[in-house]
Length: 417
Image (spheres, rainbow, N blue to C red):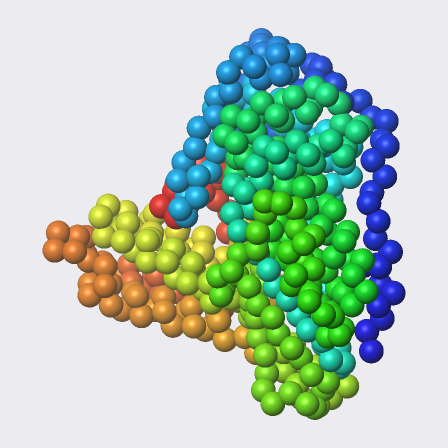
């Protein structure tokens, strides 16, 4: 049986009484310059320009960003992604986000750590229900009233931080997706909800990654969806789309007529009842992610048909089928990413990598049919041979690493945004 005395039951609101400096002074703002900033603007390497930039940030903070917030947006996947055009204002919001994280005890969960926990719980032989929810338009639905109400419960956050947050949120009327303070504010908005769901007597496991929620229960809960809706902060609502909401009832080992599956955080989990003590759990890349990778391959080939840049095409396919070290913009630390590190939990019986390879090779062999327009660039036999050397499966199994400069990566990924 499940051990229901897990850490879900012992979870309580973090202690918010933290006596740490929240000031927006020269030194605290200077700490919020990242290595990538100096790459984007080499002028920051000059002492005079650097000091002027930080002093401007100090003035912006003193004025609570009342001088006029330079907020713009771009469209991405039918969503508005906001960004701050003024670099001094961006520094202020980074410091504000830092203060919220420290004084509101915010901790971000790791995607792979969550999926490992889920796999462990799913393998249990007993009966259980699992629920998957997504909050509809989470950032856009977190309006000014909800943000201000949330901030009231965090008494140790300074008024300067709160006024800066208010000026940003009031500018658009909700949490602007993409702005520095929005992810951490999203976490504290859902803090009470997390605690209440974990405290439910029939909840065995609960996790949330941004607005993607996953719950395992003992299967004895009643009116559970009503309970969740009641605890969700208003005006937030769960997404009712079929691909965003799921419930599975899993019987005791030996009583399930067929395997069950669901997708979460880029993986598809298959629960296989093989009548052994513990269930077998097969993990693969989700259909949505497979489609996304195929789309990127297609866009790379379409781009080649227009510009005929064979080296750019080769690097784009190399990028997709390999791994690389990415630099964390906050710390400057190297973080591995790529086909293996993004999907390291898939099991040996996975067939998604072979499917990706099959689609990729099909695209190359049929380039003229699928991608070349009447005036498009031809693809030589030599280029096809070079492309066919790449393999998603090989890149995954051998953890193939490739180095790209930041400028090159920026050029490679431009067509996928």
